[in-house]
Length: 133
Image (cartoon, rainbow, N blue to C red; front, side, top):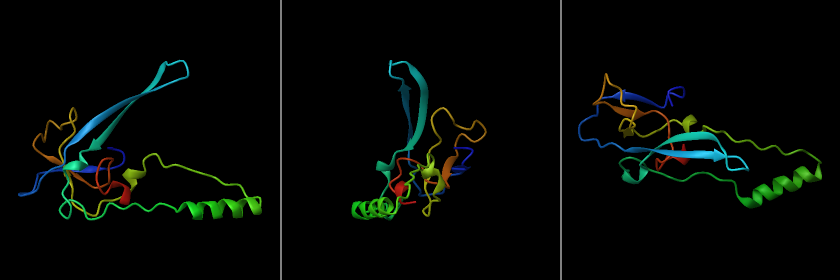
C-alpha cells in the first residue's frame, strides 16, 4: 500500500465520518495441503458508506458475453492468438473522485500521528466505488 501511494495521513475534518477497515488473512496450499504462502489483505468496511455522501456510483463496466464470443470467433477465423492478462493491483491503480477517510489499519497506527486518519487517494478493496475506479 505504501509503494502504491494509496493514502496520506491527515487530521479528520469536522463533521466527516470515517470508514473502518479490517485485515483478511488467507493461506495458499499445494496439492499435498502444505502451506506455501500466507497473505494479508486490508479491506475497507464499505458497508458503512452512505450513498450520495461517500460515493455516487458503484457500476463497473464489464464486457458483454456476446461481444466476447464475437471476438473469439473473429480470432479463430483469422487464426489469431488470444492473450489474457490480470492486473493484480488493479484497485490500487484507480484514483478516487470522492473524499474518503479511513481509520488507520489495526497494527499499523503511526505512533507520531495516532489520531490522524487515512485520506484515501486510491481505491482499495471493500469500498462501494472500488470497482468503478
